[in-house]
Length: 609
Image (cartoon, rainbow, N blue to C red; front, side, top):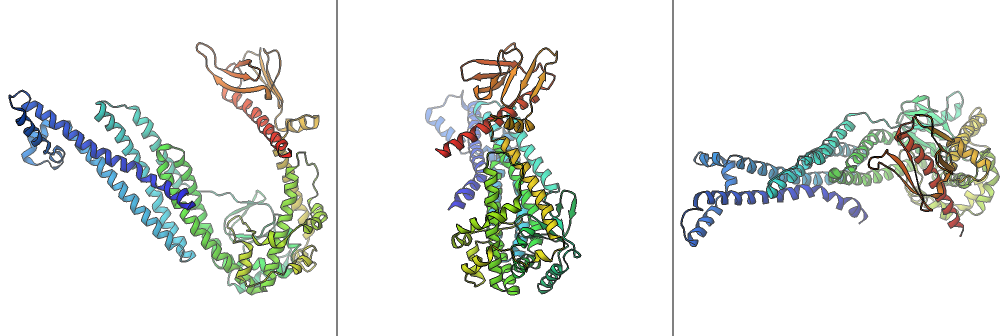
C-alpha cells in the first residue's frame, strides 16, 4: 500500500499532460470547424432572403461538413475550398498533429509501464537476469524520460499557445520562455548527465596489509579463496572502522593511494575481539561475495543508479518536468524492491558458504560479537558527540576497554542482537535472527556472554606483525578526525558565554571588518553581534526579528533589519569594497550559525523539562 501511495499514484502524472492535450485538440478541431462553418454560411447566405426554416436546414447541412477532414485529405474537388480557407487549414493541421502526438505519448507511456513491470518481475529470477533486466529497463527509461519531457513540453506549449489564440484570438510570446526554456534546459542537462562519466568517490582510511606483514592470515585467505574457487583479493586493507566488506569499486586509500580491483576491508578493531574461527567465518562470508560475482554486479549497477538519481534531481527541480520525474521514481522504486530481494538472497548464500567452511556456531558467534562491539562502540561515540563541550584529548581504545563490562551488564543479547541489520557501504543484510535461522543454528547466549568480554589470544590480530602500532596509528587518525568533526559541529551548538567558548567559535567565525569603498564606514560582524559604524550601538543577533535586502525607490540598495523592539536599522549594501552578494552571504552565515545554536539550546532545555 505504501508503494502504491508513494510511487504508483504519482507515476500516473505522466499521463496528465497528454490526456489534457488530447482532449483540448479534439475540442479545438470541433470549435474551429464550427467557426469556419459560421464564416462560410455568413459569407454565402447571410444576406439572401430565406425563411427561418430554410436557414436552419442550411446551417444543419453545414454542421455536417468536416473542414478538418477536407484540409487533411486535400482531395482535388475541394482544392478551391482549401485555397479559400488559407491559414485556417494550417490550424486544423496543427490540431491534428497535436492530437496524434498526445495519443502516441499516452500509448508510449502505457507501453513503458507494462515494459517496466515485465522486466521488474523478470529480475527476480537470478542476479544475472536482474542485472540484464535493469540495464535494458534503465537505458530505455532514460530515453523515454527525455522524449516525454520534450513531447510533453511541446504539447503544453502548443495547448497554451493555441488555447489563447482559439479563445481570445491572440497569443503571448512569453509562453515560449516560461515553458520552452525549462524544457530545453532539462533535456540538455539530462543528456549531459547520461553522456558524462559518473565518478563515485569512495574513500577509506586504513593500512594496506601486505603478505609479508601477515603471512598466516594470507594463507587463511588463500584457503578460503581456493575452496570458493575465486581469486585472492588484489588489496587487503586494515581499517579502524567497525566493518568488514568487499568491493570491486575503485577506492582512494588515505586520500592518495588508488586501489583498483578486488578489495577486502578488515576491521582491526574487530579482529582483536574475534577468535580465529569466528573471524575466518566473516572472511569466508565476504569472499563468498567475490565467488558469486556480487561485487561485480554492484560495480556495474551503482554508477547507473547514481545517474538515475542525478536525472531525478534535474527532473524534480522544475514543475513542467515533474511527471517524468515521478515515472523515473516509480522505475527506481520497483528495482529497489528487486535489488533488496536479490541482495538478501546473496547474503544467505554467503552465510551458507561461511557456515560450510568453519561451522554455523563460529559464524553465528562471530556475527553476534561483531554486533555487540559495534553497538558498544557506537554508544561511546554517541555519548561523546552529545557532549556540549570541546573534546581535546580522546583515548578511544582505553575508553573501550574500561567501559565494556558496564555496557555488557545491561545488554540483552536476545533483544538487541536478533533484530539487528548490519549495513555495509555497498549492500545491506537481512535481520540477524533470520540469518541465524537460515544456517540452522540455535543461539547459545551463555556461551556468547562467557567469551565476549575477553580479547582472544588465538586471534588473527596477533598474527599480524606490528598490529599494535598499526592499530594505534589508525586510531590516532580516527581520533583526530573525530575531534575535528565534533569541534566543527559544536560551533553550531554554542551560544558562547565564556572566553573559551568564544575562542572556539571565533576559530571558525572570526570577527570580520568590511570597509566601505571610501574608507569612511565599516561593518563589523562577530559571532555575537554586528554593527555598522554610523549606528549608536552593537546589535545582538537575538534582537533581530527579520532582515532582507531591499531597493527603495530612488535610494541605494540596503540591508534592512527589523528588530524585536520595533526599531529598524539598515546599511547600504553596495557601498563596500566587497561585492554586495558576498556581504549578504557573510552576514547570513554568521546569523544562521547563531539561529542554529539558539534552536539547539532551546531543544536541550525543552528535553530537560
